[in-house]
Length: 271
Ligand code: ADP
Ligand code: MG
Image (tube, rainbow, N blue to C red; front, side, top):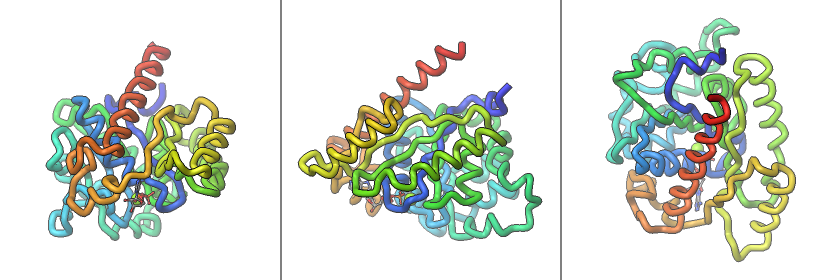
């Protein structure tokens, strides 16, 4: 039995070792869009930079208990999880102390399983989450490995820029390694093109390359470059709350429907 069958929620790691490709923006807004669909969503900020936490208005004074405490077992889920102003959307916030997680004196074989173990403490009735989205740091370090070990699937944001596909093989290799060792059922939920500009030849070329090389893994939905998506975090809101009708918000709604539809297909196949 796959280890992850013990938990009800769909756990998705949002990962790409490149910085600035749209991981945090995707985690926040896909999370909000799923929440809008009535799904109970938990975001886990696994980046020491804490951008997802800041973007959802969890100010420094409200980060007494963080992902770090949750990972090392110093905080229970109920202590670590905070609600946000967006209905159905909760978060475990992060601070820079998370960057020391990989140098802590934790025995080697357990280091990759910290998040996995911490999530297994979620009492299913009290926190009936449908989706848990993990915002990974821009690195293939022990934190990202923790996310992949704990997750059912990975969503890979791909910035519609030159060199977008570069580095992807390294990411795939890490996923394969995790699959061969700690988490056999890990799969790639999909690759989502971000910051897409329809008028730009380069965007179209990156999309064509991605669809040719990655085939069905690439979501039909592409996320346009949209200034509302970049403004929203400074208002401590998901774009879906900051400007509900913006092209960016609509795109993440579409992506949420696609993610949910793919999940249903997957669930049908296993049952
Ligand atoms: P990552 O988490 O991968 O480092 P972010 O989500 O923080 O990437 O995005 C990097 C920057 O690009 C941020 O300033 C963000 O607001 C901006 N951004 C992300 N997606 C979009 C988009 N679709 N349109 C416009 N700006 C975007
Ligand atoms: Mg980020």
